Image (cartoon, rainbow, N blue to C red; front, side, top):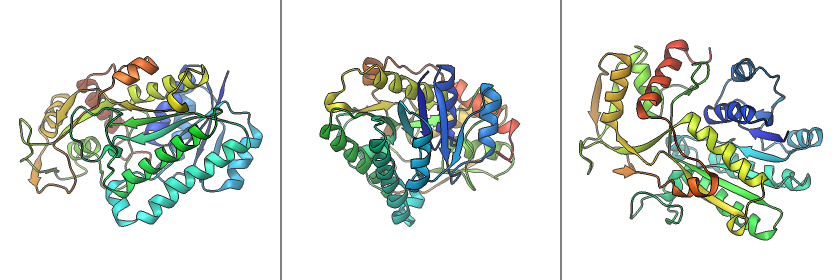
Length: 341
């Protein structure tokens, strides 16, 4: 069995990816500093997987602690989820984002190189595309990241591309996520935002649960059929399986262009804000109160993924419907009204 280090493994995407990796016979070691997560996730993962999971409370900017992990285990690859991820916060605190995301990645790469671990799957984002000229988005579209969070992802991808071209030892895949939605079927792990949610789904479910009074819809005058933004939503379990597929590809030593590939992970289908609300209402069985307010700066009319490259290179395709995504989110909310508390 292959040993894999998953940094940021207690987070929303990382935790689901770990369960998929374990189901596919990988040994997983987890590193996280709980800046965006909870220690209870580790317990949940062990209960769901039936395994004791090695865990380290580590910030990836701490080279000494990282070195200790690499000296303890013989890793075959790394999946890096560690990073700050709120767009609005990145605008207010850009230095924190560059320090945490970019410097942390460089630190991790240096330790990987020292211990000759050259297989990496990186958690990137569709925000690297910026404001596109065409839709759906292809990996060959220009990268015009328009906020500090997106620019950290863009910069890291450029670093990884340069690194991969510097030596044939490196094999790297950057997965560009669109909009994760859903939760584990057990309802035991899911998205657990700090404070008022930034993402649509947890905001809707917290309104439905009575924790928030109403949902704010940012604009209804976009160039879309119902006037609200259209986004590409992908089930968190589909997203998780995409990481396993990427890791499989790296470890089978398939040929990658210049030893680096950026690959979209989305559903390839678009749903407006109002369509998401209606799907949640159908699952929950009651209406979701909302108020339309002014647009947010930088929001696109439409954002959709072309996922043909993921199918071609990784053998990966999304499998969940939008109704399943909403139902799984609501199951998580009902079982965990206060998140991991």
